[in-house]
Amino acid sequence: MSSYVRKVLQPTETIRFETRLHWVIYLRGLVAVCLGVAAALAVRQLDLEWNFDAPLVAVAVGIAFGILSWISAWYRRWTTEVAVTNFRIIYKRGFVRRHTFEMNMSKVESVHVDQSVLGRMLDYGDIIVRGSGSSFEPLRVIASPLEFRNHVTAENGANGAPPPPA
Image (tube, helix red, strand yellow):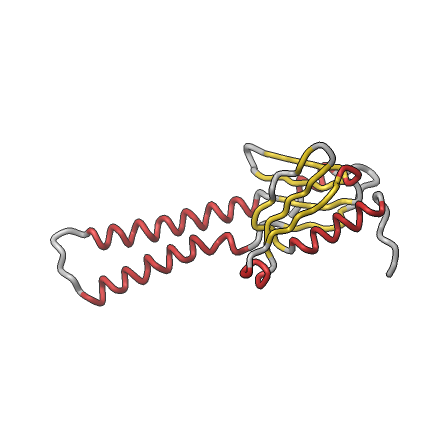
């Protein structure tokens, strides 16, 4: 991971924490494929004699939607990079059409983490970094959001130096 992040590092800059989109983004595609397969098995088990293949078309559409959703999730996860360095926060998404956002640690005022019950159990959530004069765009479905927040707030309080030992 982090080919983009490693390319944009300054000479004295080091990566403190890297994360990515959580694997839970694959669930929609997985559920759609499972429902399509279950429907196909049910239609076959019932051995319905339809004059047209509407149930089979619906099953095929469900499976195709699931596969396309899974591929889309894989692409989003593969092309998204999130990193905390000793000087800034770096967020990049996209491959051909790239969108990047960076915020200097000295500009960070607060980090908001929003996790659902499932997000707490599976360790994912949404993050919003607020800076002086602007806010970082929401980072949705990020793995290890509390660890991300801890690295940002520890670095911000130390002005780029590592946090003091406890």
